[in-house]
Image (cartoon, rainbow, N blue to C red; front, side):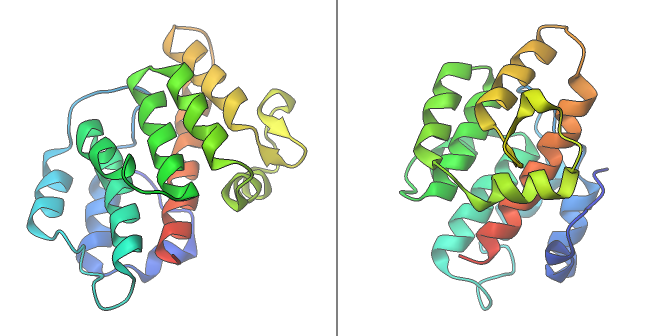
Length: 177
């Protein structure tokens, strides 16, 4: 069960908040779909947020939630059609999770400089120098770190924790779109 670190996510409707906190910590790779979260997403396609955020924000959040649920294909179907930096961000995470590291970097190049990278850097404060660009997370170095971790080199736990923080920061940013 992932711990929610950001206060912005505490404002989510109770059932959505519960579905997120009941989901397992997202793996670095492509693994099984979390059936309870997938069922919630299928039952509530507007996420219980239709009265509070825009349709674009719902699409962005839904792409992120399918990633959290482990259904990379559904996330990909949504994110590839979103022509904004956040859509490219989800798209990059999806390709990183499926192990298509070069394509992940392509999508992170499309993201460009994004406040989420700085937010992650500010929240962690202790990012290893190899994962930083200035005070921000370096998404390309993070792709490399995940690739090494999934190949059996040390760092898998740190990468999983950082990926969860990345998910939360991006999801919170998408709520504000």
